[in-house]
Length: 375
Image (tube, helix red, strand yellow):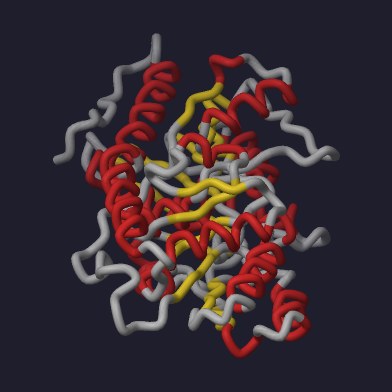
């Protein structure tokens, strides 16, 4: 390690088919360009291929979430780090906060926390303010909700939207091409808050107009069985394809002509941003951080949450007007490339690291802090 390199430990939850997992991987892949040597610790990474795990320094602690063993696992892990502890810890999500903060205390290192979502009614956010130096939120909406609920000082928070890479020319293929059966899709963790039953109900409405359309749901999670059952109950299962167990969702998105985000609550919508980067027109519910991304009838279409009829109407609106769909898709792609690109996300995050490390080193021996310019 050169004298200019600083070490960063990224503490993650299980890598799953969700935007927060993709956020961690994309951030880790680019940090070396800014002078950071990163490693990642997590309880599971079966969705990440072995070569990528090795390249990114992912270490899996299999019993990290086992109540009877987590203390032992964490202690043994920290003992390995005591000789050369990281300069900074970045806890990647609220679900990783308990073990991330435990490691920070044991190693006496400052940490940064990223929050992607909203607190539920029974949840609290109580970071150790002797070690927590910044809380990154993915949207102004998430920040405002956390400040109100937690009572934490507003200057502890910084908003850095998730970033997505520029899509390849192949992924930017023409949507609603003549002679091709259109595909309307959605993607994400199959959880109740994501509103997928309303997507299926909207699909039933669209198919009820006798249109030749296929629907696609990419993702995995606890609601998969009930969603498959609902598709059969609605009589549309022959027109709905489920694509489970993916971490890289680019192939699924490239198969879609229209992307729908039916969430009941949403921090920002990383998967939606990737669809936008591919030039796909999006139809999203008007909730949370979606307002920071989608401008109705410009960079996408907005519908009320839980309203499958309105969602169906807007799907039909795009199906019957391919030029409108392409125009909205082109505007969405420009928005993603200029406002939500991954380079901006990484640079803003590195700036947070730099500030925290500057504060830590104040009054101590000067240490070279990596600047924003790439090597």
